[in-house]
Image 1 (cartoon, one colour):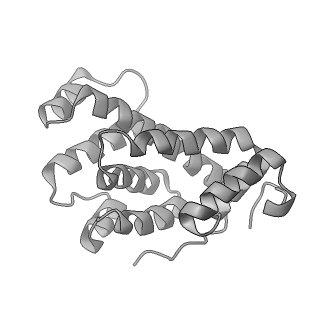
Image 2 (image 1 turned 90 degrees about the horizontal axis):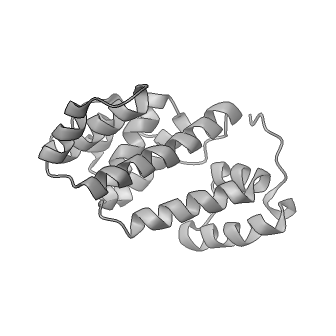
Length: 178
């Protein structure tokens, strides 16, 4: 049960309604997490959507983005985002065995992408300056400095939605992953 009282989509602020229409066009519905965020803070939802748009035009593949989102969500204990990004990850080309491994915190067998996921999980779970060795290792794996920055944006955006859903206990409106 949601803990944050939010107006319905139809009663949301005008600024949110245009964003909801954009989401409906792309997804066919407004997921509960987006509905809560947009109804309570249209500016926050606009920032998220802008970040997602920037990533879609970036240098990381959809599968890499979704692998990071899913792994960080699983690490953060966000059941809502685990369900959502299991579905979106499948649509991005991640195989069922890869999705299961990412949810379990295990390697998928795709060495380069697994290194990216390990880097992201490390960054998301530690405090202070990230050790130089982690940065050097991800660069030696073949990722560029631009892709490192884009990965940090993926982590920031998914961490925000993880926090919203964990605080709100958002009702999951995606299939439960197998």
